[in-house]
Structures are given as structure tokens and as C-alpha cells.
Amino acid sequence: MKHLIAPSLLSADFLNLQRDIEMINRSEADWLHLDVMDGVFVPNITIGIPVLQAIGRLCQKKMDVHLMIVEPQKFIPELAACGTYMMNVHYETCPHLHRTVHAIREAGMKAGVALNPHTPVSLLEDILEDIDMVLLMSVNPGYGGQKFIEHSVEKTRKMREMIDRRGLQTLIQVDGGVNLETGRRLLEAGADVLVAGSFVFKSGEPENVIRKLKEL
Ligand code: DX5
Ligand code: ZN
Image 1 (spheres, rainbow, N blue to C red):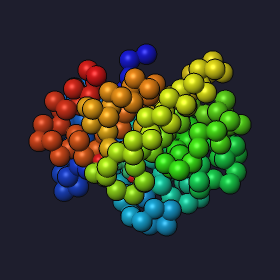
Image 2 (image 1 turned 45 degrees about the vertical axis):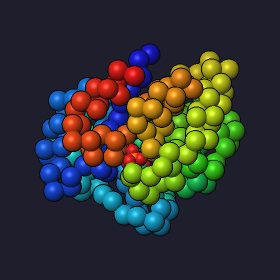
Image 3 (image 1 turned 90 degrees about the vertical axis):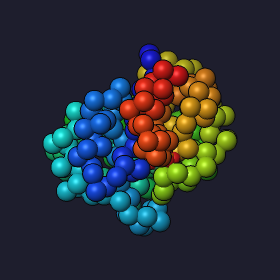
Image 4 (image 1 turned 90 degrees about the horizontal axis):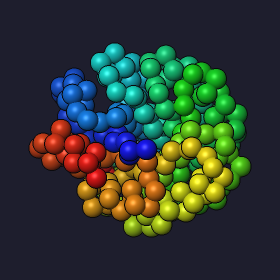
């Protein structure tokens, strides 16, 4: 499978969200990555359900929602209703992860599980067959524009081995500090989906940068 590109709207111009989403619609991006933060699980607050509903009316790409919030299961119906394709919850916020991922799938969405940089991939051993994607954080969640954590390449490789060994189709997404250089190495290590925020939106030529990431 050719890898997928999911630009993260976090680094877009929030005064011109419509313009930036229309740019994503025209671009070669596969998905639109949307970061929801609560100021509790992570030290920052971003957008919530009303903004996601509005984005859902305009966005023509698959909505990939990354929930950096406690108790994400509370919002399953709202996220399904606004057109979410992939709902990603953090392993660290879900004491009943099995119940949560099944509720996400029953609501008609795909289920992704995100891991913080310090959370080992081995903790997914007993949930891997129940999920559609693993989201490996290659920075500490909370902000765009942070430095790529080098260990993420090795972690991606480990995850790839675990998935292939079991003959699963689970996707591997990597999020944080992705550019052409780190992106290339992550793809070599077995990533399927690259998220890129500041590299796309701070470039001055976002559509071109998306094309370059897609061509990696
Ligand atoms: C960080 C978010 C990322 C963020 C990535 O907590 O999950 O999706 O937008 O931004 P960059 O690509 O700038 O590291
Ligand atoms: Zn994210």
C-alpha cells in the first residue's frame, strides 16, 4: 500500500480555517488530522465538538481525530455524527480500552490507539487485533513544532514487526516532528500514515509540501 499523508490542522491559520481546509481538499492529502486537547491530559487546549462539526461540513478528506483528552469515550456519538473516519484515543487515558474501541467501531468509525513516546508497543499485545490503527507519538503530545524524538524510528520498526508477525492489516501512523527527512526514515521503518503539521503549514507552500511528502 502507498503511504498516506494526514496534514495536522493544528498549525493552520485559525483565522482562516475555511481557506486552509479548502487547500487540504485540493491537495494530495489523504486524511485531515484534527488534534483535540483538554488541558488535563496534555498542557494545552485546542478545538472541541462545535468546531469539528463545522469542519465536517467542509472537509472532503477523511477526518482523523486525535483525542488528547481524558474520558474520550464520552464523545463517541458526537464524533461519529460529525463524520469522523478514524477516532484515536490514547492508551494512557483508557482504563477500559477494549470496551472503548468496540464502542467506537459500533458507532461506525475506525478505532485508533495512540501511544505517548514512553509507552511501549508491547502494551498493545492484547488489543492489536481489535484496532484499525496504532498512532505512535514522536513528540510529547500538546504542541505543534516540537523536535522529533529519534527513538520513534526504532519503535515504528518494532510495531511493524509485531503487526506483520501476526498477519494483521493494522495501520501505523506517526505524529510529531515529521518532515521529508524524518518521514523517509519512518516509512523505511514501516509507517503507513505520516502526520505533519508545522512542516506543511509553516512552509509557505503547503500544497507542494504535501505533494513532496506523498512522493516520499
Ligand atoms: C501534537 C499533535 C500533532 C501536531 C504535530 O500533540 O498531536 O498532531 O500537530 O505537529 P508537528 O508536525 O508540527 O510536530
Ligand atoms: Zn496529533
